[in-house]
Length: 181
Image (cartoon, rainbow, N blue to C red; front, side):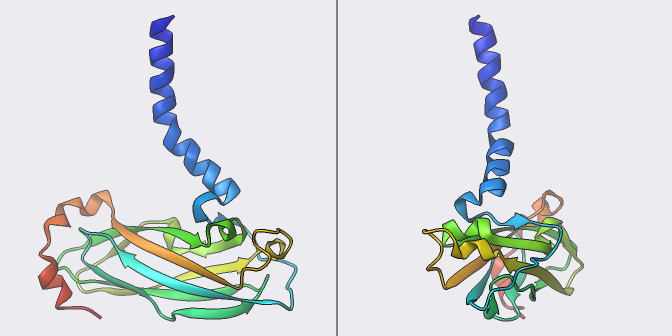
């Protein structure tokens, strides 16, 4: 019985991370956005401002930033924005973006139709790439007491080195910093 308990707890430990990720995607917990197949068919007269933030984790020699810092759109309206990444290293590098929305309660209402963050991105030495995000804010955001007064959201991305790029982690950041966009 003790052995079954130990194996059961070990299995639960391995399942915890993917289960938590699924939970966050379904509920929007922690500012996790939702991936949807189609745009909203309801567009409200009320507008909301969306700010954008781009960060690069240590070990990935990229310059990464949004083309515009913020947009204002009607709730339910589909909008496409672009982020720009440049590989500052002399070898091919691959990154994967993670994201969140603040305030966290609004994450469940931020819907992405298309996003560069859904797949890994590979850049050749010196290559610069424009990457799109197609999104809308769900009109239901105005119906919930904790979100109905939100007028501004921030969509933040951090690009991490993909396992293919782990060997590049020892890059001299001072050298890469001298070659910013």
